Length: 263
Length: 268
View 1 (cartoon, each protein chain N blue to C red):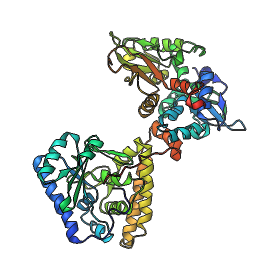
View 2: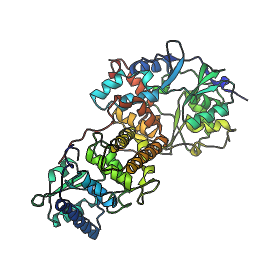
View 3: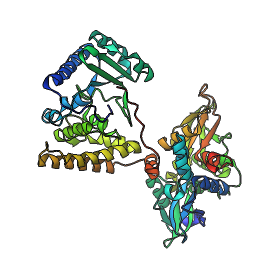
View 4: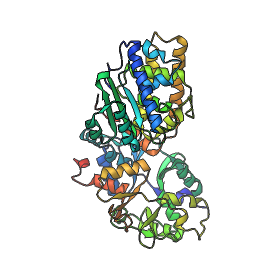
């Protein structure tokens, strides 16, 4: 999920449909089994952006795997379900991550499934608690935006996904078909490091979006406007003492975790 | 009506902006104070740095690289600025309200704009107690193995008086078996400065929840917990027997005292 070349490149329709069809198969199985499994990553953006989803293919954004969010309490049910769907689990990843991550593979089909339990924990931790019930079949739009904005070394594929999201959905104080900027602002006010990376990346999205020839002038204006609204909302959220104290130290001390890439 | 001038400590204890956190910690412990005014070459007050700010030193020194950075950080870089001030002629109630609204522990007192002293929450607690605040000539304030305790039914005025006499900034509220029920700090008492204190009020009405830490926890964990929860002190317990009478209290000042100790990482 972090290498700069992964997730970019030509991908034919058949290959894209392979991932989209497999996502449907897994979601059907999880819904039937009563498992709370929510898609994250590129396919979540595709699912949640009916109007602007075409930009992924148009901008050379390729699917490489299918990522999910889930709760620890359903680990065994998920492992059993994935085995029933023909997947083999990479047990080493599950053990090394102390149960926070599971990888399932069907090498013969070229399919790789990543499940993140309780949180996405790369440069900054984004927690799922109480949030996976909010949307279906993806995580909520606020967490989708944060999933991308928490990456310090943000890549083009993440920029493209974010552009789609900002074009498709308004910002607001709730979750239904809306990017809950209130929640994002609250999380950023609790963690200076997350604030630092998120605001830095929103600004990058605003700047880089202006260079895409696939976007119209109106769309570029929309993205710039959405970023400005988001940054203003984050800026005006009251910050506790811990945040203000950390802000005084600033970039002098590293504010994010380095990412160990497990592919 | 009492005014701020009646309570304030005249004069300012200062440090230079280029003082390191280690040097600031030594000055705080030498003078037995919780904050210093940061002043420039011309003597102008440009900020304030407290023992709580110095917790950042332990909090953010998660690895050797961060520790090196934090050891070189200066008072000028970590201080709060601008300084919150209050005119010496205003009422105590108005000054207490400012402390509450800004969620701060002290104000620099000015006379027609010129800094002339400092007034802190401890001074307001002393005013509630109706007693003069003693000089901090004892080490009680930085002791961690002695605890000032009271029961829930203790009158608020009595708690304030005991805190003032002992020179402590908090009192631990325990039940009949010694299990911690809550803590009363100067901040909890501040709202009482604005009104006439009801003598029937007990500490139960104003205490805040206890935040505990295991006796074996690292200093950095204590600093982390204090900063994240915005607490100035933690009750030290034995995690194998958390309901037992606490082992002690660790305050932000204790951590600063450790930073000031000759031979500590911060003094090398």
